[in-house]
Length: 493
Image: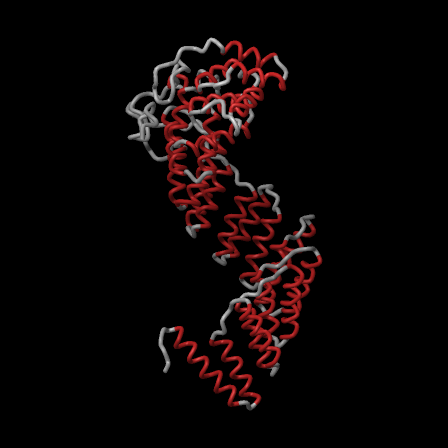
């Protein structure tokens, strides 16, 4: 690839002292990204600038089309745009006019795209600049776009945050590796991308390449990897990580299951005099809850309160969920009570965790009360929560109640039963001798695309045997064996 000849990409850091970005920019705007010879200025350009600046909107475009029937070169467009750059909205309308679908008046290239991107960026028209950068990296390689933005930087009087837009556009387009290369080249010249841009980079790398890959990029960006320049001076980052940085790292390691690293990142916050926020506490508390070490989670909760960090709904839900998981429903209820007294509304997650917690310890009536309360509040339970409720009711031989819960959920908010829900209900109905009801449910199950398994067959066989109908029971047993043999690829003849 011919892109990026300004910077040396063969090594992460330069062999000479970093220079300001302005020294890297070409002094002439007339050179194109392909280093073609500059063209002669078009004598009609002053007239175009005058028309754009002085005529009213409706008349200017028709007059320009008459003056320029064959359109503009990208170099013409760039020169015109530079002369009206203090009116960025006019530049954008000019750009859009030249892109008329029926009769395009300019075959825009990287030079003209870079010009308008810089003009929009320097005027803080973020969404418009960002949109055009997104178009540019779809048409050209991101590193080519970066090179041209660097070459045209000074002439356009741009600002460094234009590169933040480019990096974020790369990340949104899942072009992770080019984004990393651009960040490295900026850092090698002493230019630090914005902190929010860096945090977005860490998050995307962790999501796409794993937590440890994101952590390595984090250490490189903030100069924590021990790299040195040729003069043996340590490279110093111009920015320091903030609490959002550490939250991204902690969350990434938690999601990857590297719980020991969550605590390590937590400890690193103190090295940067960075105070954790409520979300930081939530991530570490969730790590302890996941590990069922609720004593540590409680200690962290008390530390959070002592440090003046007010818990939010996520924090309360984290602790409630942790206690529900280990079956300590009294503690879950206590936190739920505190949540209400603090004026924090319970959420869908709060109710679901309580329903599942009560089901797990066999307190089905309490689970039903919470479930009905969440429905009154307009919440909708997830499939796993409804399934747990069905299982709990069936375990207490309250099969018809469980069936009503499932049918109501299907009607009220489109609940889609899973195979296990059908299995619980069919087994319960068969145990109670309600075989006709069980057969109707089994037909509904097949209609949903589920095939009867050995548990379903076993429930029906047991039910018919209890009725004394050994003939049907034997037929079902043979059918079950045939089905299992077919599943194993064996033809039973």
